[in-house]
Image 1 (cartoon, rainbow, N blue to C red):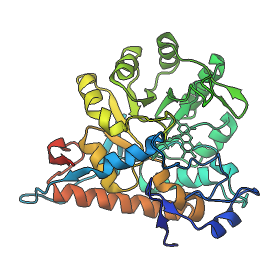
Image 2: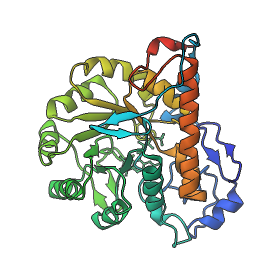
Image 3: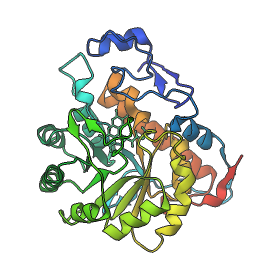
Image 4: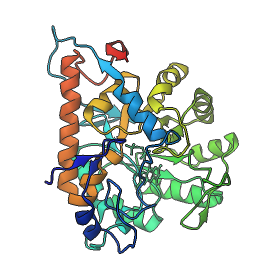
Length: 343
Ligand SMILES: Cc1cc2nc3c(=O)[nH]c(=O)nc-3n(C[C@H](O)[C@H](O)[C@H](O)COP(=O)(O)O)c2cc1C
Protein backbone atom coordinates (compact mmCIF):
# COMPACT_ATOMS: atom_id res chain seq x y z
CA UNK A 1 0.00 0.00 0.00
CA UNK A 2 1.25 3.50 -0.84
CA UNK A 3 2.22 5.76 2.07
CA UNK A 4 0.12 8.92 1.85
CA UNK A 5 0.73 12.41 3.17
CA UNK A 6 -2.13 13.76 5.22
CA UNK A 7 -4.38 16.73 4.60
CA UNK A 8 -3.85 19.39 7.25
CA UNK A 9 -7.52 20.11 7.83
CA UNK A 10 -9.17 16.71 7.80
CA UNK A 11 -6.23 14.41 8.39
CA UNK A 12 -7.22 12.50 5.24
CA UNK A 13 -4.48 10.72 3.35
CA UNK A 14 -3.39 12.85 0.40
CA UNK A 15 -3.02 10.98 -2.84
CA UNK A 16 -0.56 12.72 -5.13
CA UNK A 17 -2.27 14.43 -8.01
CA UNK A 18 -0.46 12.57 -10.79
CA UNK A 19 -1.48 9.12 -9.54
CA UNK A 20 -4.97 10.41 -8.68
CA UNK A 21 -5.59 11.86 -12.10
CA UNK A 22 -4.94 8.49 -13.76
CA UNK A 23 -7.65 7.01 -11.56
CA UNK A 24 -10.41 9.49 -12.10
CA UNK A 25 -13.02 10.03 -14.73
CA UNK A 26 -11.74 12.30 -17.49
CA UNK A 27 -11.82 15.85 -16.17
CA UNK A 28 -10.11 19.11 -17.03
CA UNK A 29 -10.02 20.11 -13.35
CA UNK A 30 -6.66 19.98 -11.66
CA UNK A 31 -6.89 17.54 -8.75
CA UNK A 32 -6.08 19.22 -5.47
CA UNK A 33 -8.31 17.02 -3.37
CA UNK A 34 -6.82 14.57 -0.89
CA UNK A 35 -9.19 12.08 -2.54
CA UNK A 36 -9.01 10.91 -6.13
CA UNK A 37 -12.27 12.13 -7.54
CA UNK A 38 -13.69 14.92 -9.66
CA UNK A 39 -14.11 18.24 -7.93
CA UNK A 40 -17.63 18.60 -6.56
CA UNK A 41 -18.09 14.86 -6.16
CA UNK A 42 -15.77 14.29 -3.25
CA UNK A 43 -15.92 17.02 -0.61
CA UNK A 44 -12.76 19.00 -0.07
CA UNK A 45 -12.33 21.31 2.90
CA UNK A 46 -11.57 24.95 2.16
CA UNK A 47 -9.63 25.43 5.38
CA UNK A 48 -11.61 28.63 6.03
CA UNK A 49 -13.57 29.48 9.18
CA UNK A 50 -16.97 28.94 7.57
CA UNK A 51 -15.96 25.34 6.84
CA UNK A 52 -17.31 23.26 9.72
CA UNK A 53 -14.61 20.62 9.11
CA UNK A 54 -11.98 23.07 10.33
CA UNK A 55 -13.77 23.31 13.67
CA UNK A 56 -14.22 19.53 13.85
CA UNK A 57 -10.50 19.03 13.48
CA UNK A 58 -9.61 21.74 15.98
CA UNK A 59 -12.16 20.45 18.50
CA UNK A 60 -11.00 16.84 18.19
CA UNK A 61 -7.33 17.80 18.44
CA UNK A 62 -7.94 19.76 21.61
CA UNK A 63 -9.39 16.82 23.50
CA UNK A 64 -6.62 15.13 25.44
CA UNK A 65 -6.76 11.88 27.35
CA UNK A 66 -5.48 10.93 30.80
CA UNK A 67 -4.07 7.47 31.62
CA UNK A 68 -5.65 4.83 33.84
CA UNK A 69 -3.40 1.84 33.37
CA UNK A 70 -3.47 0.17 36.78
CA UNK A 71 -5.89 -2.78 36.57
CA UNK A 72 -6.46 -2.13 32.84
CA UNK A 73 -6.97 -5.25 30.70
CA UNK A 74 -6.99 -5.92 26.94
CA UNK A 75 -10.34 -4.52 25.80
CA UNK A 76 -13.16 -6.20 23.90
CA UNK A 77 -14.42 -4.19 20.89
CA UNK A 78 -17.55 -6.26 20.28
CA UNK A 79 -20.51 -3.94 19.85
CA UNK A 80 -24.23 -4.54 19.67
CA UNK A 81 -26.16 -2.32 17.27
CA UNK A 82 -29.87 -2.82 16.56
CA UNK A 83 -29.68 -6.14 18.42
CA UNK A 84 -26.85 -7.51 16.25
CA UNK A 85 -23.25 -8.16 17.17
CA UNK A 86 -20.40 -6.45 15.32
CA UNK A 87 -16.62 -6.65 15.69
CA UNK A 88 -16.30 -2.94 16.42
CA UNK A 89 -18.24 0.27 17.04
CA UNK A 90 -16.73 1.65 13.83
CA UNK A 91 -19.21 1.58 10.97
CA UNK A 92 -18.62 2.56 7.33
CA UNK A 93 -20.47 5.79 6.53
CA UNK A 94 -22.77 6.39 3.59
CA UNK A 95 -20.46 7.72 0.88
CA UNK A 96 -22.54 7.71 -2.25
CA UNK A 97 -21.89 7.73 -5.99
CA UNK A 98 -18.39 6.25 -5.74
CA UNK A 99 -19.01 3.84 -8.62
CA UNK A 100 -19.14 6.88 -10.90
CA UNK A 101 -15.82 8.48 -9.99
CA UNK A 102 -13.14 6.08 -11.22
CA UNK A 103 -12.01 5.84 -14.83
CA UNK A 104 -11.44 2.10 -14.33
CA UNK A 105 -15.04 0.96 -14.83
CA UNK A 106 -14.19 -2.61 -13.85
CA UNK A 107 -13.89 -1.33 -10.28
CA UNK A 108 -16.96 -0.77 -8.13
CA UNK A 109 -15.93 1.01 -4.92
CA UNK A 110 -19.45 0.78 -3.45
CA UNK A 111 -19.31 -3.02 -3.70
CA UNK A 112 -15.69 -3.04 -2.47
CA UNK A 113 -16.76 -1.05 0.57
CA UNK A 114 -19.67 -3.41 1.26
CA UNK A 115 -17.32 -6.41 1.06
CA UNK A 116 -14.75 -4.69 3.29
CA UNK A 117 -17.44 -4.04 5.91
CA UNK A 118 -18.67 -7.61 5.70
CA UNK A 119 -15.16 -9.06 6.08
CA UNK A 120 -14.35 -6.71 8.94
CA UNK A 121 -17.71 -7.61 10.54
CA UNK A 122 -18.80 -3.99 10.80
CA UNK A 123 -22.03 -2.27 9.81
CA UNK A 124 -22.17 -0.58 6.39
CA UNK A 125 -24.26 2.50 5.48
CA UNK A 126 -25.47 3.22 1.95
CA UNK A 127 -26.75 6.63 0.93
CA UNK A 128 -28.01 8.10 -2.31
CA UNK A 129 -28.02 5.40 -4.98
CA UNK A 130 -30.80 4.33 -7.31
CA UNK A 131 -32.83 1.36 -6.12
CA UNK A 132 -31.16 -0.74 -8.83
CA UNK A 133 -27.66 0.20 -7.68
CA UNK A 134 -28.64 -0.27 -4.05
CA UNK A 135 -29.91 -3.77 -4.89
CA UNK A 136 -26.61 -4.65 -6.60
CA UNK A 137 -24.52 -3.37 -3.69
CA UNK A 138 -26.44 -5.23 -0.98
CA UNK A 139 -26.04 -8.47 -2.92
CA UNK A 140 -22.46 -8.42 -1.61
CA UNK A 141 -23.98 -9.36 1.76
CA UNK A 142 -23.22 -7.87 5.17
CA UNK A 143 -25.46 -5.68 7.27
CA UNK A 144 -26.65 -2.40 5.82
CA UNK A 145 -28.35 0.80 6.91
CA UNK A 146 -30.01 2.49 3.93
CA UNK A 147 -30.19 6.29 4.11
CA UNK A 148 -32.71 7.94 1.80
CA UNK A 149 -32.57 11.63 0.83
CA UNK A 150 -35.36 14.00 1.85
CA UNK A 151 -36.81 14.00 -1.65
CA UNK A 152 -39.65 16.39 -2.44
CA UNK A 153 -41.51 13.32 -3.71
CA UNK A 154 -42.68 11.48 -0.58
CA UNK A 155 -43.74 8.41 -2.55
CA UNK A 156 -40.16 8.05 -3.78
CA UNK A 157 -38.92 8.20 -0.19
CA UNK A 158 -41.36 5.58 1.03
CA UNK A 159 -40.63 3.38 -2.00
CA UNK A 160 -36.89 3.43 -1.26
CA UNK A 161 -37.37 2.84 2.47
CA UNK A 162 -39.69 -0.10 1.89
CA UNK A 163 -37.50 -1.68 -0.78
CA UNK A 164 -34.51 -1.50 1.57
CA UNK A 165 -36.57 -3.19 4.28
CA UNK A 166 -37.56 -5.90 1.82
CA UNK A 167 -33.91 -6.39 0.79
CA UNK A 168 -32.90 -7.03 4.41
CA UNK A 169 -31.55 -3.68 5.66
CA UNK A 170 -31.07 -3.73 9.44
CA UNK A 171 -32.32 -0.13 9.59
CA UNK A 172 -33.28 2.70 7.28
CA UNK A 173 -33.16 6.43 7.70
CA UNK A 174 -32.89 9.85 6.19
CA UNK A 175 -30.13 12.45 6.04
CA UNK A 176 -32.41 15.18 7.35
CA UNK A 177 -29.51 17.65 7.11
CA UNK A 178 -29.67 17.57 3.33
CA UNK A 179 -32.64 19.86 2.86
CA UNK A 180 -30.85 23.19 2.16
CA UNK A 181 -28.81 23.86 -0.94
CA UNK A 182 -26.06 26.47 -0.98
CA UNK A 183 -28.46 28.96 -2.61
CA UNK A 184 -30.77 28.85 0.43
CA UNK A 185 -33.44 26.90 -1.46
CA UNK A 186 -34.27 23.22 -1.18
CA UNK A 187 -31.35 21.35 -2.70
CA UNK A 188 -31.50 19.45 -5.97
CA UNK A 189 -29.27 16.38 -6.27
CA UNK A 190 -28.63 14.70 -9.63
CA UNK A 191 -31.56 16.72 -10.95
CA UNK A 192 -33.87 15.33 -8.24
CA UNK A 193 -35.53 17.99 -6.07
CA UNK A 194 -35.32 17.65 -2.30
CA UNK A 195 -37.90 19.12 0.02
CA UNK A 196 -38.57 20.21 3.59
CA UNK A 197 -39.20 17.73 6.41
CA UNK A 198 -41.96 18.36 8.89
CA UNK A 199 -42.41 16.46 12.13
CA UNK A 200 -45.44 14.77 10.57
CA UNK A 201 -43.38 13.74 7.52
CA UNK A 202 -40.80 12.19 9.79
CA UNK A 203 -43.50 10.27 11.66
CA UNK A 204 -44.85 9.04 8.34
CA UNK A 205 -41.41 7.77 7.21
CA UNK A 206 -40.73 6.14 10.58
CA UNK A 207 -44.03 4.27 10.42
CA UNK A 208 -43.66 3.26 6.76
CA UNK A 209 -41.30 0.44 7.83
CA UNK A 210 -41.06 -2.02 10.70
CA UNK A 211 -37.27 -1.86 11.04
CA UNK A 212 -35.54 0.91 13.06
CA UNK A 213 -35.47 4.40 11.52
CA UNK A 214 -32.39 6.62 11.87
CA UNK A 215 -32.47 10.41 11.67
CA UNK A 216 -29.04 11.26 10.24
CA UNK A 217 -27.76 14.79 10.59
CA UNK A 218 -28.93 15.87 14.03
CA UNK A 219 -26.95 18.78 15.43
CA UNK A 220 -29.12 20.10 18.25
CA UNK A 221 -31.04 18.86 21.27
CA UNK A 222 -34.16 20.30 19.65
CA UNK A 223 -33.94 18.06 16.56
CA UNK A 224 -32.85 15.07 18.65
CA UNK A 225 -35.96 15.35 20.80
CA UNK A 226 -38.19 15.81 17.73
CA UNK A 227 -36.62 12.72 16.12
CA UNK A 228 -37.28 10.76 19.31
CA UNK A 229 -40.86 11.98 19.51
CA UNK A 230 -41.43 11.10 15.85
CA UNK A 231 -40.45 7.50 16.67
CA UNK A 232 -36.87 7.33 15.32
CA UNK A 233 -34.89 4.58 17.03
CA UNK A 234 -31.53 6.18 16.35
CA UNK A 235 -29.85 9.42 15.37
CA UNK A 236 -26.53 10.32 13.81
CA UNK A 237 -25.08 13.41 15.43
CA UNK A 238 -23.51 14.86 12.32
CA UNK A 239 -23.31 17.82 9.97
CA UNK A 240 -22.70 15.66 6.90
CA UNK A 241 -19.04 16.64 6.32
CA UNK A 242 -19.78 20.30 6.92
CA UNK A 243 -22.90 21.01 4.89
CA UNK A 244 -23.80 23.84 7.26
CA UNK A 245 -21.33 26.74 7.25
CA UNK A 246 -19.87 27.36 10.72
CA UNK A 247 -21.48 24.10 11.92
CA UNK A 248 -20.76 23.28 15.55
CA UNK A 249 -18.60 20.13 15.88
CA UNK A 250 -20.90 17.15 16.41
CA UNK A 251 -18.80 16.07 19.39
CA UNK A 252 -19.41 19.41 21.05
CA UNK A 253 -23.19 18.91 21.09
CA UNK A 254 -23.08 15.14 21.58
CA UNK A 255 -23.02 15.13 25.43
CA UNK A 256 -26.09 17.37 25.73
CA UNK A 257 -27.95 15.32 23.12
CA UNK A 258 -26.99 12.14 24.99
CA UNK A 259 -28.38 13.65 28.17
CA UNK A 260 -31.61 14.76 26.49
CA UNK A 261 -32.19 11.25 25.07
CA UNK A 262 -31.33 9.43 28.30
CA UNK A 263 -33.84 6.66 28.98
CA UNK A 264 -35.19 6.68 25.40
CA UNK A 265 -33.31 3.52 24.42
CA UNK A 266 -32.24 5.25 21.21
CA UNK A 267 -28.93 4.42 19.58
CA UNK A 268 -26.70 7.46 19.18
CA UNK A 269 -24.20 7.48 16.34
CA UNK A 270 -21.77 10.30 15.64
CA UNK A 271 -19.53 11.24 12.75
CA UNK A 272 -17.46 14.09 11.38
CA UNK A 273 -13.72 14.03 10.67
CA UNK A 274 -13.11 10.84 12.64
CA UNK A 275 -9.94 9.95 10.76
CA UNK A 276 -8.32 7.58 13.26
CA UNK A 277 -9.22 5.18 16.04
CA UNK A 278 -8.08 7.92 18.44
CA UNK A 279 -10.72 10.29 17.05
CA UNK A 280 -13.31 7.53 17.27
CA UNK A 281 -12.36 6.94 20.92
CA UNK A 282 -13.19 10.56 21.74
CA UNK A 283 -16.64 10.29 20.12
CA UNK A 284 -17.35 7.06 22.01
CA UNK A 285 -16.10 8.52 25.30
CA UNK A 286 -18.41 11.51 24.77
CA UNK A 287 -21.45 9.26 24.47
CA UNK A 288 -21.74 7.80 20.97
CA UNK A 289 -22.80 4.15 20.91
CA UNK A 290 -21.03 3.75 17.57
CA UNK A 291 -19.41 5.99 14.97
CA UNK A 292 -19.46 6.42 11.20
CA UNK A 293 -16.20 6.62 9.29
CA UNK A 294 -16.51 8.27 5.88
CA UNK A 295 -13.51 10.21 4.68
CA UNK A 296 -11.30 8.16 7.01
CA UNK A 297 -11.53 5.24 4.58
CA UNK A 298 -12.08 7.18 1.36
CA UNK A 299 -8.49 7.44 0.12
CA UNK A 300 -7.81 3.78 0.77
CA UNK A 301 -11.11 2.70 -0.78
CA UNK A 302 -10.79 4.76 -3.97
CA UNK A 303 -7.11 4.23 -4.54
CA UNK A 304 -6.47 0.67 -3.40
CA UNK A 305 -9.92 -0.88 -2.91
CA UNK A 306 -11.39 -3.46 -0.59
CA UNK A 307 -8.25 -4.90 1.00
CA UNK A 308 -6.79 -1.47 1.76
CA UNK A 309 -10.12 -0.45 3.29
CA UNK A 310 -10.10 -3.54 5.50
CA UNK A 311 -6.53 -2.77 6.54
CA UNK A 312 -7.58 0.77 7.43
CA UNK A 313 -10.41 -0.57 9.60
CA UNK A 314 -7.97 -2.95 11.31
CA UNK A 315 -5.61 -0.03 11.95
CA UNK A 316 -8.38 2.16 13.35
CA UNK A 317 -9.62 -0.71 15.55
CA UNK A 318 -6.08 -1.13 16.89
CA UNK A 319 -5.82 2.58 17.68
CA UNK A 320 -9.15 2.44 19.47
CA UNK A 321 -8.08 -0.63 21.46
CA UNK A 322 -4.77 1.02 22.33
CA UNK A 323 -6.55 4.06 23.69
CA UNK A 324 -9.03 1.89 25.63
CA UNK A 325 -6.20 -0.09 27.21
CA UNK A 326 -4.37 3.09 28.23
CA UNK A 327 -7.52 4.43 29.86
CA UNK A 328 -8.81 1.26 31.53
CA UNK A 329 -11.92 0.92 29.33
CA UNK A 330 -12.56 -2.82 29.13
CA UNK A 331 -15.37 -2.92 26.58
CA UNK A 332 -17.58 -0.75 24.41
CA UNK A 333 -20.20 -0.36 27.14
CA UNK A 334 -17.69 1.12 29.57
CA UNK A 335 -16.60 4.37 27.89
CA UNK A 336 -16.17 7.19 30.36
CA UNK A 337 -16.00 10.89 29.47
CA UNK A 338 -14.10 11.67 32.67
CA UNK A 339 -10.85 10.50 31.02
CA UNK A 340 -11.04 13.44 28.62
CA UNK A 341 -9.38 16.82 29.25
CA UNK A 342 -10.35 19.77 27.10
CA UNK A 343 -7.42 21.97 26.17
C1 LIG B 1 -18.44 11.27 -1.18
C2 LIG B 1 -19.43 11.32 -0.07
C3 LIG B 1 -20.76 11.01 -0.34
C4 LIG B 1 -21.71 11.03 0.70
N1 LIG B 1 -23.00 10.68 0.43
C5 LIG B 1 -23.90 10.62 1.43
C6 LIG B 1 -25.24 10.21 1.20
O1 LIG B 1 -25.63 9.91 0.07
N2 LIG B 1 -26.10 10.16 2.25
C7 LIG B 1 -25.69 10.48 3.52
O2 LIG B 1 -26.48 10.41 4.45
N3 LIG B 1 -24.43 10.92 3.77
C8 LIG B 1 -23.55 10.98 2.76
N4 LIG B 1 -22.26 11.40 3.03
C9 LIG B 1 -21.92 11.88 4.38
C10 LIG B 1 -21.28 10.80 5.23
O3 LIG B 1 -22.15 9.71 5.45
C11 LIG B 1 -20.82 11.36 6.59
O4 LIG B 1 -21.95 11.82 7.31
C12 LIG B 1 -19.86 12.53 6.45
O5 LIG B 1 -18.94 12.32 5.41
C13 LIG B 1 -19.10 12.79 7.75
O6 LIG B 1 -18.24 11.75 8.07
P1 LIG B 1 -16.66 11.82 7.73
O7 LIG B 1 -16.15 13.08 8.28
O8 LIG B 1 -16.10 10.58 8.42
O9 LIG B 1 -16.55 11.76 6.24
C14 LIG B 1 -21.31 11.39 2.01
C15 LIG B 1 -19.97 11.69 2.26
C16 LIG B 1 -19.03 11.66 1.25
C17 LIG B 1 -17.61 11.96 1.59
